[in-house]
Length: 242
Length: 331
Image 1 (cartoon, chains in turn purple, green):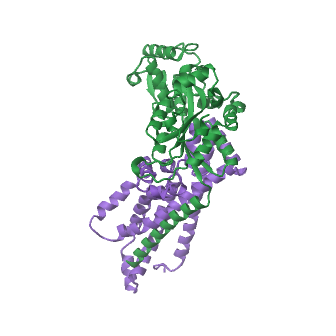
Image 2: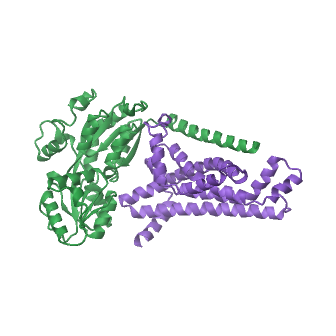
Image 3: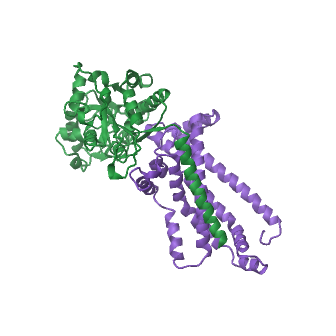
């Protein structure tokens, strides 16, 4: 308990003194996980649209597969990427291993199932009457699609934020293919693990508190923004929103 | 669906841009990198950060250090993912040289492993030798019901040392590990020490981690044995051969030049003195000792002889066929 209290104090100390190392590590975590989220969203949403709205053979199986992939063991994924990206592996010519780029890719692959599954669910849940109504009013296929998309936007946003949270808190992949190289690929999670192994418990606790605060802060901001958006829409005529 | 195709296109373009953009930035706008693969027991003491800073102050290269267990540290190099290794397991180093991947081995530092345990020392090992101590621990362990020995159990350099000690004492540690008093932690040094603390048990540790945890108050185990020939711990630096063709698909990108420069720095007076003085301020004693002066031709100290017995191959730290023509490294 004593250590947790010490950690809390140290966290305040580090944040308000603007400790450059902690600042750099935090920024790096944000930039890596942020880019990973962007990539996974750009890929995940079209896949979710396909899964959620189009009827095809094997759809049920594919949806189950993505749901299962949410729980992929990260050390296994990290190991897989390590072997592929290693200089003696098939993608070794890219020379990405132990660069932040590798972590971005690894995390993006890790979190894409989250985006896909939740977005597909959100899109599926949109009432099919909306498409009918849109078509009655003369909408093209693209515009009808937009209508559905806007209805499902909250769910898709939730999926994206959830995937960011997952990427930001990721350790296994970041450790194995980033290497936790000081000043280059060390992120919050790998630093916490490393400092704990070295016995610097209060520093680890401080970094954990910082990590949690950031996750909470980002989630809060997104929630506030989406709530305001929702309220603006409710105020406008409750039709299809375009 | 036209919209759908546009989305996929956007995703593909962004992915390619991110990957190529970041890689162009990292490879062309940052300094050349030297990747050093080392063991956790060396890295966690913080010595390498100090050496890195000193080296980067006078060399135009970005030293990047990856720490892992000794076994995988060497594997990184075998795969071409590292340019230099800093490890402490002569048996593995010998194989590393013999398989044609490692070259230019230099012994740079040494210290001693330590056997630590509860202050009460129920097995009465204090003041004896490592082999006697282990025998006493076995006898004591078999006559009671708690776990009194924690092994690293993770194939690390420390674990390999432990196995060799058991072997020297006449035991097969795999069989011992099945007995109730022997616990295999399968963890790093810190976690193993904490476990030993919880069980009031004995364990083998490296000096650095033990001192760090002890001074921080995380453990109260006492140092019961050190400075023994059998507990000698020798660190060497080995470069990776530049034309590495392991698996025949490794791209020729080993940074040999900077690796040799780094080795030269480690054995220089400046590097050796940094190694020698590291930890003195923090712990009141050096965590490591420079090995270069000790091993100089006319040195007759006892420790020098121990190092030669333990870590030399065919009477030298690096047999001539593995020196890759770097004659100025070997006076």
